[in-house]
Amino acid sequence: MKSNLFLEFKRGFFSKKFLIAILLNCLCLAVGIYSNHLALLMFKGLVLFYIGYILSPGGILTVMVPIIVALPFAASFIEDKEKFFLRNILIRESRIQYFLKKYLVTGFLGSMAVALPLILLLIINLFFFPKGDFNLGSMAGVFHEIYERSKLAYAIISIANATIFGFIYANIGLTISFFIHNKVLAITAPFLLYILPAFFFTYLNLSQFEPSATFDFSTSTRAYIIASEFLFLLMTSIIAGYIKFVKIDKDEV
Image: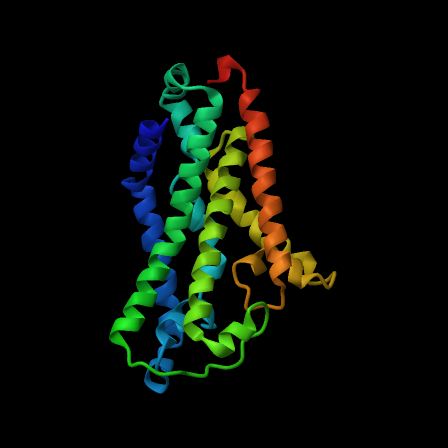
């Protein structure tokens, strides 16, 4: 199991899709920085990280992130079937072993696709920009007290939250692939789940429950809401995915 897990991770980590996801994330951060680049001349401290990721009006990472995390490996189950790998794999390992391996690798690569560029951006900011505080306005939403006390602590919490987000939403795409064998849908379904509720949650005065608030928690949400949504999506994807996968007929693999 351990060797198979490593080989699966290696397959995903060195894939073109993972590289594209990393580059797409970097592009989103670059757009955010460029859209508010004048702030670099006005403020010190963690301004680069904040205008690239959290506080930039032109930042697009909060929109693109579900696709970024699903891109590396969410469609890998379908690829295993198309290349006739799946039947041979299931001869050497049980279905539950395959499912756990696929779930862990998909989630981990999704986490890395969103977290690695953010960590790199934070390191660059810490090493190459003058130390000091800055004030780009007050922060609303969850953890705003931490933001007021320590911009660095808030940045680290943001990256940790993005890592959890990446793990969960990447596996939503994987779960979808068990039901509908379409690679495009496996990658775009997390985006649809993430973005579509915003169109009617606002009118129902339920903005704090929008899925997008679990990533961009500078909005008016609460920590328990984020944790509850993450737990619900995590458990639903695991249970639904496993039930569907173990029931897939032998002729389908």
